Image (cartoon, protein in one colour):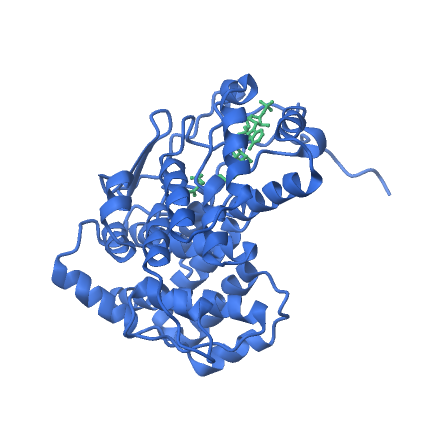
Length: 390
Ligand code: SDX
């Protein structure tokens, strides 16, 4: 018998993962990190404060945050041998492939630091990952441009240092733009965690085998790269660009989506959990207008995205399926306005999500109830049979 699902046989997997980190109500469109609403965190917190909150469970005191910030600044340098790793790759390499490989390579410089059973090493690895992933990401960007890598500038805060490493050059001083800085910090907060999404579940599953935090995060990056997950922010910009370049009307494109012509999807729409407007998408949409206005940029792709959203939200096909914009629908327009190439968009998602991945890995790793992951299977293949006589 084929085509039956576990539910048809009455099996419902009640062994849901228990976590204290993030709460989502898909029907109401609610998202909270450790109980704090995403709207409040996005408007008045910082990425580092949210990272601490996700990992340690409470808001940091001013001293704790200052020490956390200082520790991260002290770990931004990469081993000089690791920088040679980038020269082995083609400049056309996708930055998501670069950063996942570089993270695995990073672990080889800290063999003893990878021990998941040594709390001190887990703490140090947490700081190293938060400090070094942005540097590795910036180097992947510079590699694609054929430009020299800059050294981190520890006099700058986390986001400003990252912006300078991406857009600064050896030829002239780099001027920090506070608009970019604040917008990027807010976007990193919005991506910081999202309970048991595909990449976080991957991080937990890999970690449950006793694999170290570097290997688990590298696996999470690979899971995030898919266009149905984090790769959607890159796919949205490609979709908008194709509509613009084809001269096809938005209405005609929506009709093709509804007819499922060539499997086309409205990227940036729909969600496994949200059957209402993704609360993050609301914040990003407001931010897109602010950032482009502040930068004095008008991007026809933003207008196209709004027109697409308007048509879809009024169309029964999308309403019946409860398809709304998700976090990926508007982020790309902002990243593009900041100057990031499209292929860096999902890398920015990964940097945002890193504290959430680390928080979930640590929660799994310290839970005495944790067993090695082994998703249930319902066998629906052939019954026992013998090989033909030969
Ligand atoms: C992220 O899980 C998380 O939390 C993820 C994330 C996070 O923070 O970690 O929120 C980040 O990954 C956001 C999602 C980014 N992906 C995209 O934007 C890609 C486009 N979206 C779809 O691929 C889809 O909506 C998913 C994968 C996101 C969710 O798929 P579901 O819930 O399994 O929905 P489904 O595939 O069962 O679809 C139900 C119906 C189907 O139509 P019918 O077969 O009933 O006729 O809705 C249709 C689908 O064809 N549908 C879409 C659609 N999404 C679903 N039709 C057109 N365009 C879409 N985007």
